[in-house]
Amino acid sequence: MTAPLLRPLRLGGLELRNNLALAPMAGITNAAFRVLAAGGGAGLVVTEMVSAESLKYGNRKSFRMLELLPGERPAAIQLFGADPQSMALAAQAAERAGADIVDVNAGCPVKKVRRSGAGAELMRSPQLLADIVSRMVRSVRVPVTVKFRTGLEAGENLAPLLARVCEEAGAAALTVHGRPASQFHSGPVNLEHLAAAAAAVKVPVFGNGGVGNAEQARAMLEGGCSGVAVGRAAVYNPAVFAEIAAGLSGESVPRPSDADRVRLFLRYLELNAGIYGEEHGLARARKLVGYWLKGLPGSAGVRGAFMGLKTLKEAEGLLIQYTRKK
Image 1: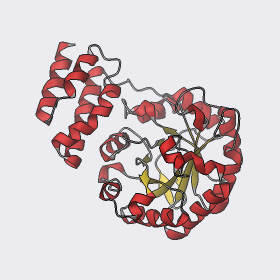
Image 2 (image 1 turned 60 degrees about the horizontal axis):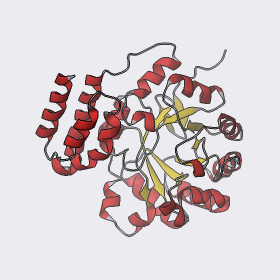
Image 3 (image 1 turned 45 degrees about the horizontal axis):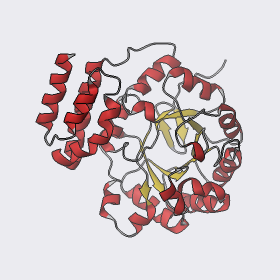
Image 4 (image 1 turned 90 degrees about the horizontal axis):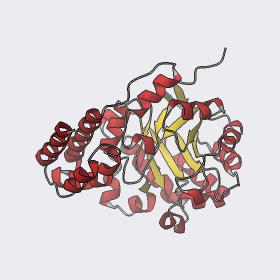
């Protein structure tokens, strides 16, 4: 009898309620968003990437990014850097902040990150990556995980080698984005490369890239991945995890209505205001309003009006007025 595709998953000493994770996204997966994703069915949420070097030098903004809320557990704090000692110190800071898992970013394709030797650039140096992982594993009691890509350029698959390197260094689980760094977040996801990475190790491997529904998740899980990490599909629909879970279990749940999406966005704004204050919280939400209202009739005008708002009352008035007009 085959194991169910949707199932609890153990990462080191931590057991997740299911094998669906929120992928880390810079500027998006802050604490407010992570709370919504956890409430929407994610078995694990992951922070935005935090600079190990900034933590080393006491950067207040970076330490603020380590803060976790009760409603988002279990949560992984993702760190980036290229110096094993700095990454180990950052891992300890993340553990003190309450991280259930510390994750290593070895897949970010952004030039600014790669120029520092971090992110996807670590894929060029498996021994350095191993040193970073092993030093972090020795420095903390929580599981250490790693996220990387299948390759740097199209056609190559470095993932099986990197998976083995990270496993031998002590990583408790891996997340593999099924596109090379050169493709960023567009183009096809190579399921064969993901399957090869999963087959190369005994630790759980989360497949990542382009997953927005149960069918796409099923393809990764049936190919050998132990779990699935969902990124962009969750940006405007944090309940996508519950939808995927239902589909994998042979059930169905209705997709959120337009009014549901607007109400959820208001909840996000309230959480953001609680973290950053009303004006700053609304300002930070400007990056997401386009995603959240994407595809809704007349949303372009609402997006434009939202950019000038400074209070929750103004935001609520605008969005409620919008839903009444529809």
